[in-house]
Image (cartoon, rainbow, N blue to C red; front, side, top):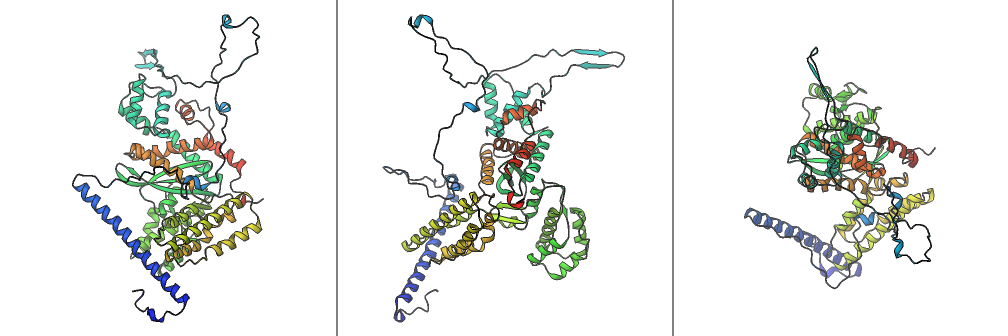
Length: 554
């Protein structure tokens, strides 16, 4: 035990007494944490027993706060804390409203006095929408050629799918993917305006026969990767046919792309960054360097160096080589070799953009995939929020340190707006000072030490001021999938998962570019193709924003 060797009679000075008290307080904190964990586990088990009995668990109901004004938010992991608060200003919507028709409203002359003078017009813009069917009975000309024994029939206009027009299809797609409406509600909406549509037909619209839009998604992703050397990356759980899978979100200020995969390991991350292309593997100096970092046996590394070097091999070829030359590999060793070779092949490729900096959390699968890994300050701050000291001195220490933590965060935000060499040096030095703090609260001091260890990844903003300090954009993208999952649960087929990824990519990217997703999808479904490709808009905006200025100072 901690105090088995403690002799109270030997305590003769204040410093020694203080050390003993601090030790006792830390022991109390450890015991309190254990009690909380056990209480949580007991409640979980009680809920599980209730579920097995056909009852419900304990509801999570927050208490009322009568007679008190809401306290100001101190939740630094909330969306509001990720940016500087701006004073609210009412903006004008008139410039964003398209005028479809104009009409002059006249006064009844009999209501006017004899001396009334005309003073012009006062304009008022009124927004409205008209929802009605536009059903058409087409009389298609039909001819028969006896000599050819063939019937000729006039075709429906472009964009028609079966017995339904492009307007109906586009509206259904937008309601489902952009507005998160469930399929039964879409059918109910159509029924209320006079459209007769089966559930099977609607399902086919939502997931099948959109090769052109799938190709546009791929073009959006490639343009997005080329638009900046840095990218956000995050993932969230999703389900396909009731099975747990993962949705990966890659984005920057110009686009957001979604990818549903069965796994989320390092090989899958490389797959996602290559737009799920066929895997390739390459043994070279970089791959061997990774294997040294992974701690692979020297004899195994030497054998790998005897295999073909600096050549891209498909998965079947590479695994066959491993089976022939290293038949005794364990699962973990084999996994590390595949990861190292896949990352090396990804970095060596020329046909697809290679991400130079990933901004994400500190999950291990993200390590070594890009040249640099920037960590999210908000994720780091959450670790401090999880500390719940019971003793007043430790609570005070935690409050004081988190205050300094977020003050430093604000200074980094200011630096992003006005970077300079002197400020860069000052902030780097202040990081060392701040995260060398020792409070006596063991859990807090351990957390501070862990943050200090991440200095290089947390301070990449000093070299690249254009990158954000948090991973908010990717988390917001993941939240859209969560909302979609809450309404529609999940796709049931690979085609459905592919459609979810494509249309959510189109919707999120159109929103970032200020494009109406309804008009865009209608343009594509109808075959008009009058609106510019989103990929072209990304390339155009990227040239204006210069998102990678620090990589190319010239």
